[in-house]
Structures are given as C-alpha cells and as structure tokens.
Amino acid sequence: GALESDENRGLTDFGKTVVAEMNKIGMLIDVSHLNRKSFYDIAKVTKMPIVATHSCSDFICPHKRNLTDEQFKIIKNSGGCVGVNFYPPFLTNRDKCGIDDIVKHIEHFMELGGEDNIGIGADFDGVDCLPEGISGVEDMYKIFDRLLARGYTEEQAEKISHRNFERIFENA
Image (tube, helix red, strand yellow):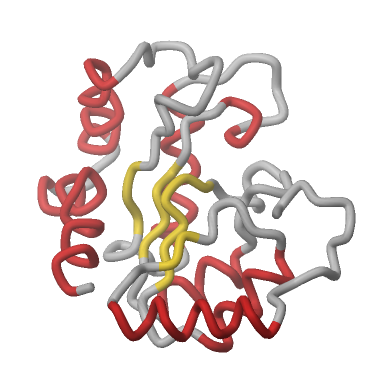
C-alpha cells in the first residue's frame, strides 16, 4: 500500500497472476491505495484501463497517496481515469482548503491532456473532514459552477462529473 514502510515492495508473482485473471474477466484495477512500485508493476502487466478512483495530484500536493504526473500520463494512456479525492490532506498542505483546491487538481490533470481521464472520486464515505463549502453530494454543483465560471464547457464539466468514468465502466 501507499503508506507501507517498504516503498520497494511491489506485486508478487501471485499478484501478477491475479492481475491477469482480472483482465480476463474484465475487472478494472483501482490503484488509489498502491505505492509507486506496485503502481508501475501493475502498469506493466495490465491490459485494461487503469483507474485511480480517489486520488489527487502529487504536483499540487505532495503526498504518498497522490499521483505523479508520470503516473497520471500512464493512466491516461491506458484509457483510464482519475477521480479527484476531496480529502483535505490530499488537496493541500495548508490548514484550510476549499473548492478552489479541488479545482486546482482538476486543472492540473487537464493541463496534462486529461480531459477524457478526470472524474470525481470524492470519497465521502472514507474521509473524516471535507473542504470548506463541501458538506456532501448536495454541494457537488459548486465544483462544476466554478469550472464553468473558469471557461470550461458544459461538455467538459459533464465528462468530469460522470461521463469519463461511465465510459470506462461501460466498456470494461
């Protein structure tokens, strides 16, 4: 896992067999909790799109759970998707964070060519705090209103809100 002390520990031979079996049955692999070594091991053996259902950008906020630009590009090139997580320690190193911090991660992935590879992975059921202005699913519109105000198209906002993940799940 991402927080394991041995960062050089990756997939075992059995793990590679499991990935091959997952590929056979059309099961997607979620890399959100993996360390970098395991991520790269999976990227070498999987034939399916890679998903990180609830991860953020390490460029914006360095954290062992966040993805490097290189990892994002691998996910993008696999046809996969990254769901931006709303957990404040993954969004920023500051004490407070808000909607603009979520948008920064989206915009960074967009700059890497990820229009078809970004989604929302809020992790509402797995975090103990949320950014200011976000209490739950009822506040999701605020993120998309912010994107539209910054010049994103309705189509781009819909891709990020659900279409990108929907495409992957339908084709798996």
